[in-house]
Amino acid sequence: MAALSVPSTRNAPSLNRIVAWLAASFLLLPILVIIPISLTPERYLSLPTSSISFRHYNSLVTDGRWTKSIVDSLAVGIGATVLATVLGVAFAVGAWRLGAPLAKRLRLLLLAPIIVPPIVHAVAFYRAWATLGLLDTYLGLILIHAMKGLPFVVLTVAGTLANVDPRLEQAARSLGANPRQAMGWVVLPQIKAGIVAGAAFAFITSWDETIVALFVTSRAVTTLPRRIWEGLADNIDPAIAALGTVMIVLTFAAVAISTLRSTSAKA
Image (cartoon, rainbow, N blue to C red; front, top):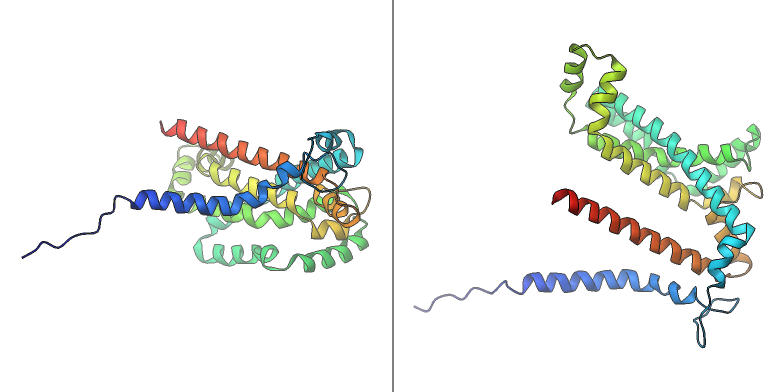
């Protein structure tokens, strides 16, 4: 009786690798088109033909409008990240101590900023901030961005707390540590990865937020997404492509550094 032939699986890893590279190319190549556009010598969006120019990269540094928007976005993003991280960690740890059923209900309440459409936030905050005198102020925008980044901090920290044994904190307390020492020496080191991830999500949320900023800011505070929006609405400035190229390079650099560090740590 002839032996049954089994399909070879030697080519499966190669096929998976090819599919992965094709998918990555499909996602990345349209984005990478802005790199040659950023090198155009013209004052409008176009591909360079006869020569290349770095004038639009220079305008990111010399043009006061771009530098102000970058500084404003950094200031608002850092402030919102610190506030969202502090409040999010405190909320997640408090819910963790209360127990699973009540913690789930409280975390569901914190998801409202993600579920509600941004335009609803924008209209609501415009009305509230107009009454409180916080329109077009750094404090007003920091509070809004902190509120939008808070759910991400709570979710990431709560995910890491799920793997922490509550008895470790109780053991530290029984050995003489006060609540602050038990929190700082036992709990926080074990959830450091969740805190860092939540802070990163909160900063990215603030850095990329546009709709609410268009409603509650005008001249005193001009974040980078608002400046890009104005540039696209009035005149498509190739400096936007230069800025996009810089952000792509920084993103790839951050991913590469993180990958190298994790690889070296495993080795």
